[in-house]
Amino acid sequence: MAVWRQITCPVLWVAGRDSWIIRDFATRPGDWEARQACFANLSVAWIENTDHMLHHDQPEEVARQIEDWFGR
Image 1 (spheres, helix red, strand yellow):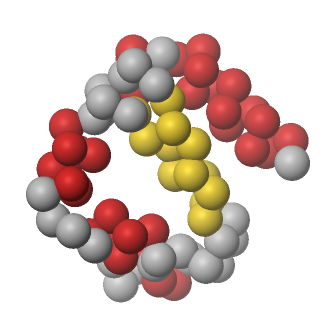
Image 2: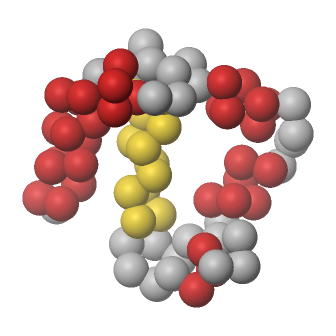
């Protein structure tokens, strides 16, 4: 997280809604928010119906989210 705090460029955090990591964060209140707070300029994109390997589960949707973010 110390390294993340040094990042000043915009960041897109893409997460799978059904990811085991997201479920794990739910057991540690505040951890998800603390990690996201490390970034000065963070956008979050959720991919529905996908686990941790979202780029395998829904590659087209991941690509769309990234392309949309870069197009802003």
